[in-house]
Image 1 (tube, protein in one colour):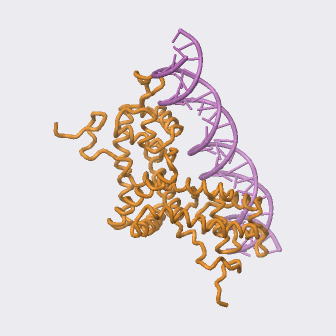
Image 2 (tube, chains in turn purple, red, blue, yellow):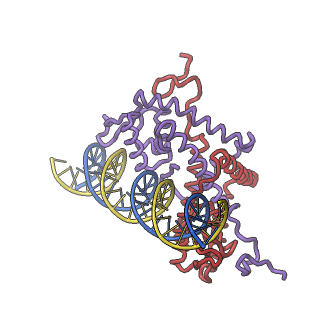
Image 3 (cartoon, chains in turn brown, green, yellow, orange):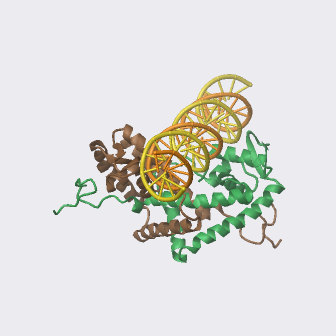
Length: 169
Length: 169
DNA sequence: AGGGAATCGATACAAATGAAAACACCAAAA
DNA sequence: TTTTGGTGTTTTCATTTGTATCGATTCCCT
């Protein structure tokens, strides 16, 4: 028998069978999920934060007082997620939310002292776990991974037109 | 003023402020999400498939008749997702599900003629989109990205102990 | 054989997500 | 000034996802 057959005994075109495990979107999804789980577990147990909450906190911690919309742009989160995460953070006393004095529709999110403390404590944790991840790769691989992800993300962004917002595993 | 201050006017340790956009887990999540969205849209409009369904179909298409558990292992999906995706595929007439003759608990999933047709048509689509993604990177970057994701995923797998299963964006 | 633990798959229920609608407000035109 | 359309944010609701559980069956040990 010359022609290859797949597990069904059928002739699958003439080419290589499709291998999910070498399919980039699959690998990307699996890796992202695993990494997210690792971080989520740490954030949750150490600080009672979800990942969306952590992201919002990270943005406010860096840029200071922000509108929810601005947070969404910096954190690549849609407005619903920002709204919910912000509400949760306010409830926990990590953020304060007031009216934007210049715009009756707008809100302004800012750190409380408590939130600032959490922020300064959670950042080293995040960096630490990231460093642990980096340990699994060579310096060069890590650098390329970062660069490639950035490029790929941008490339997909172009393909799908203007960003529809989203994310946060 | 010698010591740097962040947007809050507070002294954040002595180091660089935390930049979410250069944080690997963040980038990974965003990229994975965008890519998943792109594929999901195509699968949905072209074949009425969700990503979990596509994964199950890909596994059966490659390995032939499989138990749901086996599918879950090959596709990195927990059993609930496999169960649901399989049910949906059976409902669409793409898969058949019968009793495992050797084990009263087990089921066996196998392709129908219809499912086989879909599979042979969806695989080129998937490869095509993947190729489009690859266009955004150099050959070397693409190769490293794949390799790095594999390594990273495995590394995280070790850190978090035996896999808890999951995934499918 | 017989009983208890483990496995396979489905189901139930709860939490997270996203799309669309609702709400409150602004701003520009008539 | 009233209307009209648009923007910022929250809320609602349907869908998706995950954890815990259940029923059925097999495996293992005595």
